[in-house]
Image 1: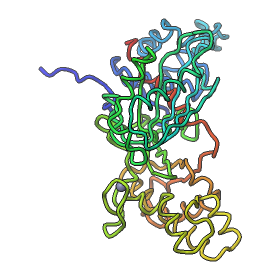
Image 2: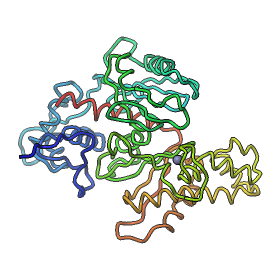
Image 3: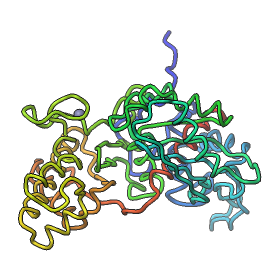
Image 4: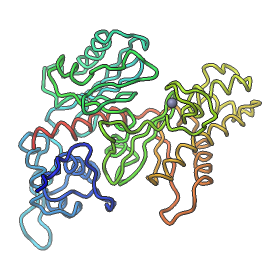
Amino acid sequence: MTETPALGPRYRAPARVPSAPRLISPAGAGQVNRTRLLQILYDVGPTSRAQLARISRVTKTTIGAIVQPMIDDGILVEGEPQQSSSQGGKPARPIWFSPVDRPTVAVHLLPGTVRAALVSLTGSVITESSANFEATELDHDVIIDCVTSCIQDVLPSDGGAVLGVGVAVGGIVNTDEGRIVEVNLAPGLAGLELGPLLSRRLGLPVHLDHHPRVQALGDRWFGSGRRASSFASIYCGEAIGVGLVIDGAVHRGVAGAGGEVGHTIVDLGGTVCRCGRTGCWETIASHRWLQAEAAIAGLPAADALTVGPLARLAGDDHAGAEELFDRFARNVAIGIINLQQILAPGLFILHGDVVQGGEELRERVQKYVLDGIPVHAGGAPAITFASADDDITLLGAAALVLSQSLDLLT
Ligand SMILES: [Zn+2]
């Protein structure tokens, strides 16, 4: 007789899932079920057990088994009984997040910069802090000191408890071990056991994940990916990465190895990438490419050029800028076409410096994507740009804590 496999982060739902996140029955699917139930709550607001059961197409008993530990722990609360339906019956009590329960700490670690925020369970940023360290810093203690101090700045001043810490890392991570594997732009972060070390310093549970995946979770719970069962959340700026939500669940790959779409090879005869390989998507659609091409085209301040200034130069008909702007749009589209051909997420939410290209860039990327894929009954993919100043990654890091740390309750 074979044992029922443990349902951890590697578990993915069956392929056919309706637009509402469907729960997995019978009980025992732990984190996946809880994540989806929390998604439904964020999607539709305070909701009764009966409504939750209807939306997710499982029994009220299954819903009870998922929400009760979270009610017992004080994360969810039951509101006042609402008027019963016209058929009569017991008045329903809406379930929602406790306004007074422990907030979470959300952290975004980038090469040379760390941002931390205290986030309420309802998804509001209560307070924020940031700090810098040398991107070339090799001493792990110095980096941990900087991150710890930044987190301590946002902890409740009254010493109140927090639920845990979620960290979005702009680099390759091992989510099973809480370790940073490699960050091309900050070599000193390689091998840093950030999760265990921070947890020891702070006395709190710490969960870390690849930045674009955390961004995807933020999009799903609080941003343009709300209610979408599948989409790709792309970060495109000084580097490129993707977080994939497939059938309602964030896809990590084994130990969090997935998401390095910036290093999928698109040009075998291309230039050498920072990762040491040749012709990665990043070599033709990140800042580095843009600045090298701007220098060749003789554009002003080429070595610091980013997408916003390029869009303005193109809008002003500056010689060479329009042609470069268009090639950039085509190059961004190439990676999106590949993702659509393989997984057909259907919706692409772009973040990072690319959004500074505005509607003109979005339209061009969309056009090149449509040119590059066959017409299919599944519909044409949509390209959207996130707001330039959103807190989606920090909110996603808070969502990471909610979806993962609650495993302790099962
Ligand atoms: Zn590469």
